[in-house]
Image (cartoon, rainbow over all chains, first blue to last red; front, side):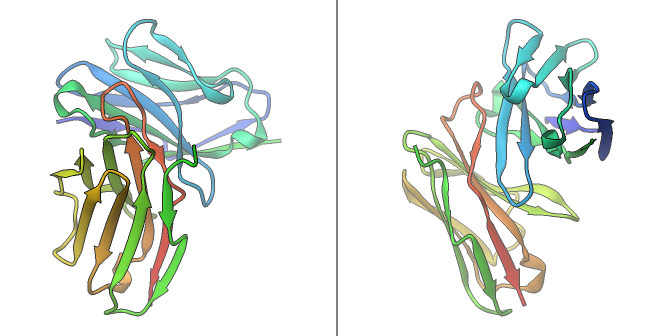
Length: 114
Length: 114
């Protein structure tokens, strides 16, 4: 079975400060990890993914995420937050034994204050 | 590419009525997913298809819910009869169908059952 945990329901940061949204996962095989963002009244949008290779992956809108196998984590980061980054963020995991089916976390609401 | 297209965007219906939600996935995507999002339960996978075949419908809450995918470019999610607790935003997503790709979500259908 695969699972994802986003330990923080809410993350608040000031504009211009770095941000981190946390995610830990559990899978039986090699993890395929994803981050999505959801703006109000919209569907989820794909941000970035880790499949293999470099542990630091870069995605849309200046976001990046670091894969840490020993800690089974895939935290989302951005060096300098913008007010427009305020949204709901979902981490998702998929393993190779269940191709196509991702498990999503409960989501973390990011609020960036001016 | 128009993305994943869902219709209608909003649906208000009376309890007991039949509701049909529609989805057109991205051309060439082999996997299609139906999700439900509520404040209480977050994002729930209802059912997913691979090459038009239902693979996992364990998330379908009751026999009142049914989903079909008659061809690669169309899927429906039907609720009959509808109940107030079915009120939610229903998302359709599609994917190329391998582990390496994220999902593309539609804009969702906001269902209100009164």
